[in-house]
Image 1 (tube, rainbow, N blue to C red):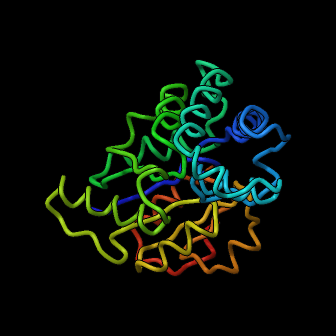
Image 2 (image 1 turned 180 degrees about the vertical axis):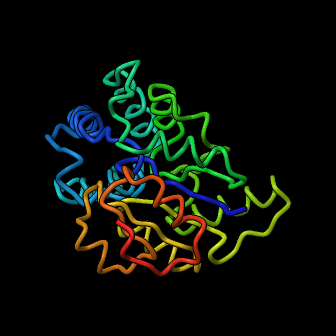
Length: 235
């Protein structure tokens, strides 16, 4: 049994257009400026981290964001929900559903970790029907760093399974450099997917154990998950 930790945005689903518009409305409402999520390197970061980075870009004092962080997240969840269609299966990336279906047939323990808040994740999983594949999720509001989120996921999985997960027993699958780096810090297996903001070239330079253009070749991804790692040729 391995602990398989999936990132959500641009790894399994693509709602960046919705996030972009929600961010624009949020910043207009709170700060009176035009701002979009895609103006910054948002990949693998929490909502609040992205709000802070975008605020710096727009000359908004950090203290103003920190003071309103809870209200910003709550408003963002509401705006995102209003812009999200009830049925959003077309936002699920190619190969994802088949990969998750195949993983469900194994004894691996599959969870989510994401910079999104619980309210965003609940809406996305309900709209896409992907929620049934994950035992739980760790959110960006629960830990200050990506590594901290992984540690939370490991601790919860160990509590549920009464099994110790360490080193390559932990598999992190994501589209960002931050996913790869967080896994490396903990000695986990890292599987990078070039379906997001960070290019395939940049991902390769970060030296994940595996690198895929996307998850269409889900059988190869399954093989990677059960392997010992350190093979960049399975794309």
